[in-house]
Length: 212
Image (cartoon, rainbow, N blue to C red; front, side):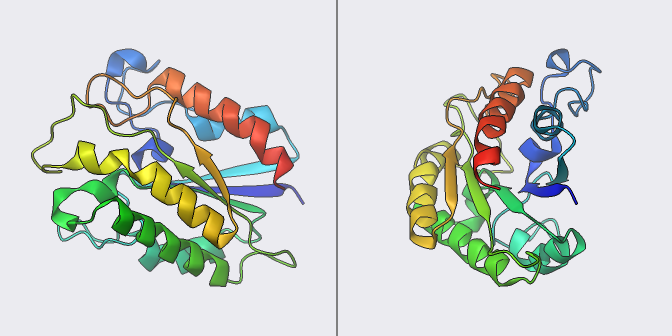
């Protein structure tokens, strides 16, 4: 059986493209030659199965009063069991957790990630192996960001998320990657560019074989 890598994330895992000029198909989603998940599959080769579980707006644990089923915690059991056996779970979340309506600072967002890690560890989806999790901290939201629905304070809160995730990952004994230098666009300042997807895929392609 192939080594199964499950990628749990938000719009940056789904492949949302904020700038149609940056996308080969000129749409709102990067295609299979552009998304980091698909590029990772290509780089790893036929011995691996990389599965996308990206949802725009997804949080770690925060229940969204506007859209239902956005928190990963409440759906984690079903998602993980539906994709078992999992050899490596990659979690790339945190960008949406900074929304004003959740009233969570970086430390609280880190606590949310820790709660999600604990939940993932508890799910019987790992076969005969121990839980194997990689937390990827997304780049911080850029200084030009403004979105009335996401609200105020997002840029400042996002600056501290990566360090909180690093602390949590170390405490929980899971792997950690900071994607800080992967390019975010200059349109909405919170989504990967096509080049950013390629950068992240390259980092993961080097790291993943050492983890599974």
